[in-house]
Image 1 (tube, one colour):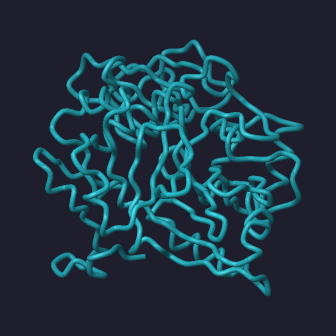
Image 2 (cartoon, rainbow, N blue to C red; image 1 turned 30 degrees about the vertical axis):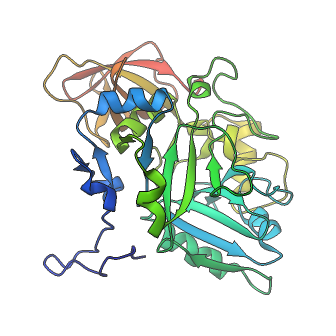
Image 3 (cartoon, rainbow, N blue to C red; image 1 turned 90 degrees about the vertical axis):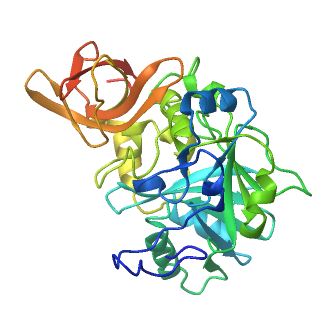
Amino acid sequence: MTHPSSPTTDPQTQEPATWQSPLLQRPGAVASTAVDAGVAAHYGDPHREQRLLVEGLAVVDLSHRAVLTITGPDRLSWLHSLTSQALTNLAPRTSTETLILTPKGHIEHALNVVDDGETTWLITDPRTAGAAQTWLDSMRFMLRVEVADRTEDFAVVGEPVARESVEGEHLAWVDHWPGPVGDTACYGPEEDHPGSSRPWREVLVPRGELTAYVGERPLSGTWAAEALRVAAWRPRAGAETDHRTIAHELDWLRSAVHLHKGCYRGQETIARVHNLGRPPRRLVFLHLDGSGHTLPESGDELKHGDKVVGRVTTVARHYEDGPIALAVIKRNTDPTAVLTAGPTSAAQTVVVRP
């Protein structure tokens, strides 16, 4: 998958080229890297940018995200049959999310889903969107559906808003985390969940209108958005997931899995672990010791004493709580234990009950 206004490869490195947002021209913009390359990590003051998001004043440039569409009269029932969420009766301009699982039930793709009455729109990770599109195309058979990559045509803008879009507005996907959404289960708290105080939606804007849509509103970078996501215990595909992640480990059933819909790829694992067992790993929230000069990085090992019990998945600096992180650890790890990532100590808060 290539991005608009970008060559297929960088002429000097011959590496795949990355979309460069026009909003990187704003004063103070510092480009993000790795998973969020192409947009701004921050605009000079990440903590202030977090406060602006909490106050509902700023927006986040997510124009590096991938946008797929599904058209045709069978689109919702077809996607329903392939993925983890109930989608057949999804009303126009009503948001949900769904997972594409491997045959063994591991998370392969996470899709933010909203339908406008004629087209189903999917917002997803640009690194894996091509593979998701290829797999969806391979499953069309004789059904009346068409899958298209619309990333060159539409950009995504994040807003601290919980309201669905209405006619006359740009279509938006609203994050209903922490739910619960529909017929599902929670592996963490159902009340007093920190994600309940994080309104969030992602607006689909024609790329040529991106700068005008943002206008004079303050911009916050991905560092600010990620810090609030971590504080909300919100998993992200490609960050909290690896090749063997199942939804139960991240408490992702609560917003992305319907437990009593028809069969779909990976459904046996969802049902078996929910009914008969416990997930082998669990998501935890970490308060990190910020007294040192460095913090752990995503992918760093977490230890209890000399024993490796998991890995750090996302690290952030919160404007109130200081250094925080999400991590995935072995289920039977003592929930009261102080863990370490290199020289940094980390105090656990239970997300998925052990």
